[in-house]
Structures are given as C-alpha cells and as structure tokens.
Figure 1 (cartoon, rainbow, N blue to C red):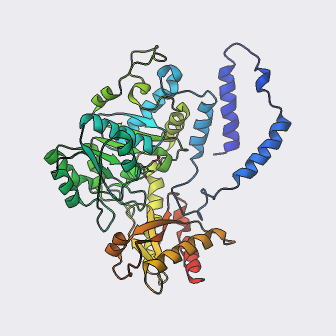
Figure 2: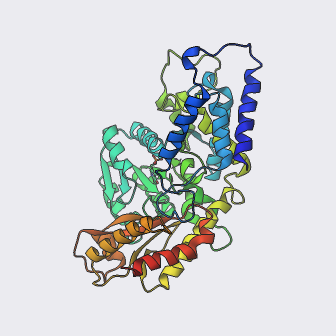
Figure 3: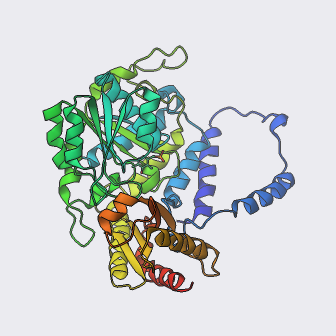
Length: 454
Ligand SMILES: *Cc1c(COP(=O)(O)O)cnc(C)c1O
C-alpha cells in the first residue's frame, strides 16, 4: 500500500463529504502558514528520530511494531471527522463499525452470545472485567497467577477488592493445585487466567481450570491482552500449531480481554473486553444528562466505563479486519510467521554453546541467556545486561529486551545455575513481526557474536 497515495485519498474523501454542507470560513485564530509549519515540522520529525526502529527485523525487543498501513489510513480518515464512540450521536458510522469488529472478536473466541466494546487499552479492558466481577461477587477477591500482568494486583486495589497472587509452575503457568488451595477458603469470587503472559507468553491451562468454576462457584476471566489472536493457531496444520484445548476453552469462560493494539495490527488506543453474558450490561447503567437522544438502541457509552473514546480506533480495526480478518487464513498467517520464528530461534539456541534457552517458547516470545562462567545468577544478570546494551550501540545494531527472572523460577528451569542472588535478568525477544521469520538466523548470529565478544 502506498501511504502517500492513500493519505491523499483520505483527505479528498473527507473534503468531498464536507463540501456537501454549506461553505464557511475557517476562523483566523486558527490560521497557520505553511512556512511556519514547515520549519516546525522539520524540528518535530528530527525529535521523533529519538526512537528505536520498532518496524525493523533487527528490533527484537519489546511488544512494539507499527500498525498496518490499512489501519493508519482508516484511523486518519475517520480522525478527520473525529467521531466519539461514547454515543451513537457522536459517530453513528464508527459505532456500527465497533459493533461489527467486536462481534468478529467474539466469534474468534467462539462466544455464542456476547456483550463487548473496544477500550483505550488492555488495562482499562481488564479493569472493566474486574469491575463486573466485583459486582457479581461482592466481598470476594480475585485470584491470578504471579506471572499475570501487574495490572490485576493494582486494579484490585483500585476496586477495593483483595487480590490473591497464586504461584506459577516451572513453565510460568498458574499452578492449579495452589489455585485450588486458595479457592477452598471461599474468599475468591473470580479467577483471572492468562492466555499468553506478557513476560514469556505462557498460556494458563484454561481447559483444566474450568472445572474449578462450578466446584467453587467462581467466575473465570481470561486476560488474553497479548495472546488472544493466537486462538487462530489453535489446532492449525504446520509447525506453528498450538494445542487446541486452552484456546477452545475460552468460549466457556465469563469474560475475555484482547488488545488489537498488540497483535491486531492497530495503533495504540485499542483494547477490547468481551463478556459472554450480555446481561452484565446492567452494571453499567447510568443516566447521562448530556448525550443519548437519537435512538432506543443501547449506546456503546452505556456499556463502557470510559466516556469519550476514539471512533477512529474502531474505524481502523474495522478496515483492517475487512482485509486481514481474525481467521486462520487472515491474521492467523501473520501470527504463524512470528511463532515459527520463535521455534526456529529456540532450535538455534539449543544447538548453541554460548546461549541457553530459558524455557521453550509457547507463542512468539523467547527467553534466553548467555552461557557464563561461573554459572551464577549474578554472572547471568551481568552478561544479559551487557549484551542488551552492546547490541543497541553496535554499528550493526540489534535491539533486545531483558526480563527479570526470580530465583525460584530460575531454579525450577536451571537448577545447575548457582542461586547467589534473588534473581537475574535474562534476554527476551518478542518476535511479533512476521518478517522475523526471514531474519531469525541473522538475529541469532548477531546475539552469539555479541555474547562472545567480551
Ligand atoms: C499488555 C498487557 C496488559 C495491559 O494492556 P495495555 O494495553 O498495555 O494497557 C494486560 N495484560 C496482559 C497479559 C498484557 O500483555
């Protein structure tokens, strides 16, 4: 897609629509001449160079990549109108697009019924899920694994409910025996399971945990902010295949969160929360003196804790889904490439004598560390930090990230490494760009070289 062409077409289309209304003069207070703007724009774009090249395959660090050009064009075109998806009056077209895009997400997870909406982020989406959970189980707390995103503990404090962290097993998944011990106390009303932890992409055993719901009368919320779109690889043909059971089980859970701004090719500002039971909409009820007047239909603002939300986000997601739908043959192919890249890199590291795999990747995130002498956590930590820093400043740079692995978690995977500290940083690469697949040998060689040159 030629962005230059399509951004021009976006402006044309909106101007043409604007021209169907009466002519008017823009106010002189808003006037900016092109020369003034030109000079400032140059300064602005120079400042933006202070960034890492998230788009480039040599960037194999955090969960960051630019949006798809279709999402950029969709976002910008709608933003020229600037609809607000708080209410139908704020943007009927983008409210309809939001409903359709959310229905596709619900369908991807196999929900028979749903009530859901887009949010500004995974954080807000999870907050809404926990808010509804609290309303349904007042006075009872929330359990989540120690590897769950830190937002759950924090949002429990915001909501005034007790958070119960549960230990994770040797693969970073919630320990179901430990979870059951917590549930036996009767103090917990909701269990948060993570489908793809932010650290290493571990997937909690959702299918097995489902049995606990009836036994202990709890709700199950799935935080699939990062991993949700990997549902598309459940039971796939080929090496990227994921075991179907945990992903298929999401359809039975009470709520799920997924971030289209992570693996849905969207710019930031696009999370989603989906409830299986549409009846939970009653917890959002309120009377707004300002807005709803054109329809009897449920407004998105009536089922969302956020008020103003960018209609442009819904437009971008809708347009992207028309081209790359959340199906195995659509977006699934994009995720499959990153997953194959992680598997390939894991094999290369297994065969390497200078790098060691922290654990096998479940999705497209890989954790590894330099094989050091002496084999202590302190030495692993120092070597990881050095490779990270050297990689970024090298003339042929490679961008990684680090992850702090706790002492017990490290010992569960690598008992031979002497635990002389309370943990160690390891190297971590999120291979969320499909281009990583073509680049993984090069990435591996670069990291091996950096590790050797000390
Ligand atoms: C990223 C993430 C979040 C937080 O979402 P934001 O969109 O960054 O606010 C929550 N849970 C998990 C598992 C995540 O990966």
